[in-house]
Length: 168
Image (cartoon, rainbow, N blue to C red):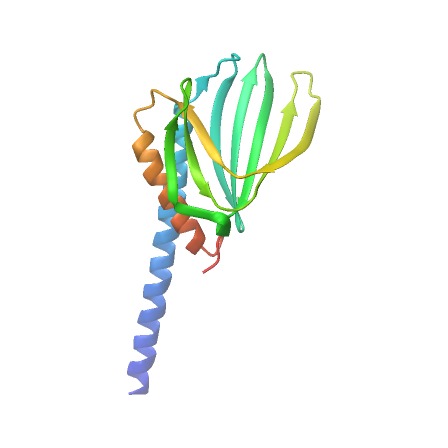
């Protein structure tokens, strides 16, 4: 009887571990898809800057970088919000005329920082006032907008459950 309990317990632990690994694999592959698709959907804004977004996860934090490059100078808006302050059910796209944005459902304060790297190597960075939204930007003609909304929603759902980022 005791041996049977040990076997059942071992099977349960293996199933939980296998499920967690599968969830992490899904999160990693979905996040990679999001970033590949955003890189492919870069665009030139109305100021002549090539613009590409990137989504990153850190322990408890969602980070979005919107990198703009012009004449070799790179300007990055870095947005950060706690994963607990994101409503994955509120991810939605919006056509802004020259480009498309996908907001990521922030319900808490979003920190913003500007990082600049100039052609000559000079680097500066400064904090900006907190805001209420976090988003990615992409080419408005990108056919993957609907898939990106779904993928970003899934990334947020999985990240909140992943012990590397959200916790459970």
